[in-house]
Length: 412
Figure 1 (cartoon, rainbow, N blue to C red):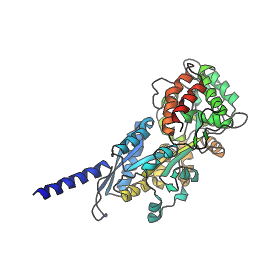
Figure 2 (tube, rainbow, N blue to C red):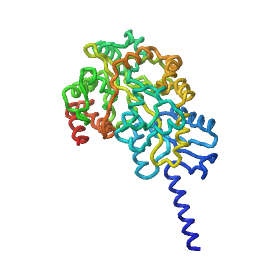
Figure 3 (cartoon, rainbow, N blue to C red):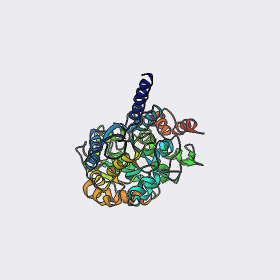
């Protein structure tokens, strides 16, 4: 009797462990047994949640024995949640992975190369730049569903009402500043940004600067300070941008733009679904302003991979192959969720996006884009910049001092 109780206890412990790792156990023969997979991804609106849940339903439609349970968290908190789940043994089976976060959380994902070979999956049908961005030490950690350069979103209605010509790709920093000043009136700012790197690194790159040296963040060199100072002075000196709130609210610049409180802001194509479905004005896209004829922006992209603790990696890969497959990529394009990484779906995105200047802006930006390499601790660096950068935007601390403060905490 004692041995039977021990066996029962061991079995219960084993079952609990499988649940904790994010996947229900597969059938003993690995064929035909129902499997429930947890999938975690960031989402900043119900519209995004609905997109991901639809893709989860597509998996079940193709593979009836696989059920994908979707979990979301705001982008601001997403990567902290991943590491917290991993530390507590509660990591989902399938997870989103942004290229910029590979140095920080890449160790949580498995190499998918063997899965490609087993299923004749052709990764070359996806944009090479973002495919490479989701690699680490020769391992393919995720397959991308989107990519895109950071571009300038603008409120065409505000431009028209102010009699200001709408921006075109390649417009200069002088044209940008003049437009921002003309648009700043009646409680509306011409531009909005915060201190997260995505918002201001294009200005560093456009003046010829770099933010990494010897594989580590280099935030205190002259060009980085100059670029960061330029964007903070839009709030402190030019008075065409508001200072971010001290709370560091998630997605604050996008919210200000969507609410009509700011005429321009910088973001990627993946924000289109949130923007178009939550505004009552016409949205346009252009490139970030050029300094001395040069406009260089950063890029980003996200894919989905199988986590190292997943008990059903084969089923998880099957699910991912649907989530990033041709049909799903067309659906993503229709929804405006992101610029598809699957090359054959990109023209479809342009046709269905129906945004002024989208193709010209994205094509122009991609022609000079920086691939946006990052370093370990990048998630921490971004959080610290958002925390301390408020002081640079409200004028209580010099931008260079803020950068030095952040650099000192992420150095080493």
